[in-house]
Length: 371
Image (cartoon, rainbow, N blue to C red; front, top):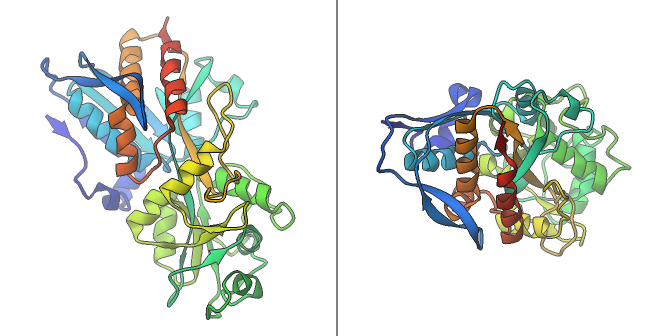
């Protein structure tokens, strides 16, 4: 029997239970089922070949940025492999990295790489980064009577550091000539957990306007008193939706699912660019991919590149003691990086990988071994 979330799951995850864990489970193995496994590539994912179904259990935790995608791809993978169970708990990138380091989980979802100081804490030894999808981080807002806004990096930095306090401030007006803005007080909403979305959003502010942004960057920062916090991307979206005058940073998928409005953001080329999957793909295309397959699409050049674009990864160990777990993990990664898994990205409102990056990630799967 197969158990997953209903077709409306992207809205259900705003409920308390869905915020605690996103778990998609399949049982009752079937010898006639087939799984999709990757070979060399087609656009938006490697081509798929038919492989024998795999079984067993994998536990993962971490990024809420990628959680909507995880729900979709886990559902499709376990449908093809009814003996497999993949559990994923959204608790923020920092929580996922900690779980993996302590071998509480088999893989971590993370929107940022581990720091050099973190690496020695990984009890399982060497780790590997598998890029899976990318997406925009929106600057979402709730302002009565206003549905469209332009915001430059300087204005965003001043808003989130509380030096701009009302919606009719001159800095916001300058970005939006001719728009009548109310004097409503601004309520800044941020993440309460250790978050890759926070790390990438603050990395953008640090890169784009280091003069006005003085809080630094990281999975957590010291937010000013008077701001509000939400748990996970969906939690931030809920707070924004319930408060007139609120503004916060939310991944595109969750912002869209919550029905939020978001601003166009001024990029390096001077254009105000909407948060779209195409804009995210253009940002990724302009980024340099490192040897470990991490990359930074934040504030990249390009006329149409969306400047607050986040990568997201599945982080694994290079070696596991359980050979069956290795087989299941390899099959799962192959599915994610295959044509069906990358098609799921768009269905869940994320940008798929470029063919080149996808093929590099596929080639790395062979580095996961049992021993």
